[in-house]
Length: 255
Image (cartoon, rainbow, N blue to C red; front, side, top):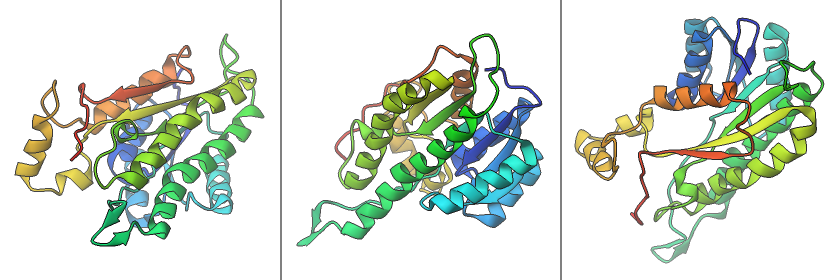
């Protein structure tokens, strides 16, 4: 799919980090971008900086997703690009200090990272399937979800996070197959260790230690590199039903 000045896009979790980088990239390519996030102040700031629109959303609530997409479509028309970057990553062991992993915390992580992704992706897909086709392949849209390499090599304390991201990976192929007759592609990215606000808040020695375990290039990933991969996935129509790792050949250790 070609990204043009008439292409509408929605990006969740776009008030900072990878989501903000994707929103900035797409706007730089001429797309009309809607920022979907819970953080009003930061979300509105990003939207203003790229000439987009901010839509407050709780991805875990279907009604909130519907309202946010309605606002985005009123401003820009039906989105042809949906990128899901919203997520959380609390850490807790299965058993620690004689106590079991908090069940509510586990449920929250899965609800935000997996069910939230599904809520947005499925509702966006409905709108796409009801749109006109684009280009010679008869495409109607593309959905890109964010997984993690932790889905493959979850570390100590990542039971909730890793399993939620494994669910995103498991969602990719069947959703792509479900939507294939409608010309909607579904993909996922499994990023490694990237320079997000969460990581750059760590002391430099911790950041250096994390980078030292990356085979090549021996540094943290840049948000712009993640966004660039999103751009390629959008424009390369043959990519469908696939999860792509972007991690410098990293394989996470147990801790």
